[in-house]
Amino acid sequence: MRIRFTSLLAFSIERWRVCALAAVAVLMALQTSSGRAAWELAKEARVEIRKVVWPTRQETSQTTLIVVVVVIFVGLILWGLDSSLSWGIQAIIG
Picture 1 (tube, rainbow, N blue to C red):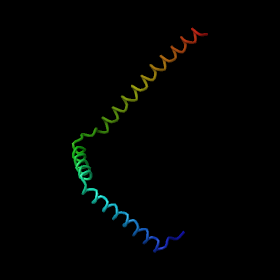
Picture 2 (cartoon, rainbow, N blue to C red):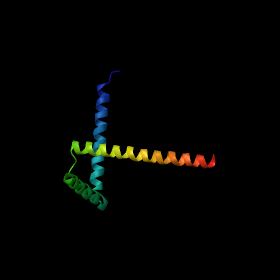
Picture 3 (cartoon, one colour):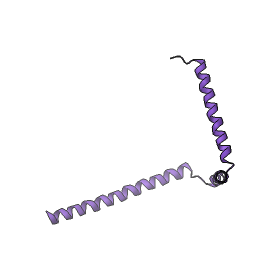
Picture 4 (cartoon, one colour):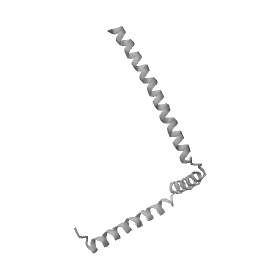
């Protein structure tokens, strides 16, 4: 399948037209009070994200291991409780 130059050119022009329309829509939205509030929120969120202290790879691995162990432990407790209750109820009702 050969792509013709004219279809590539048309696709490229269409893509730029969509980007230009999106830019115009953003600029128009920024003229409203809601748009300005959204822009301020985005700027403040960017500042806050820069303040975050992200965990190291080792901290992430350790925390993940702790969560997995606790989930398995709680799962075993619930399985034991469910089995014993099931056994007890079957003993009562036959």
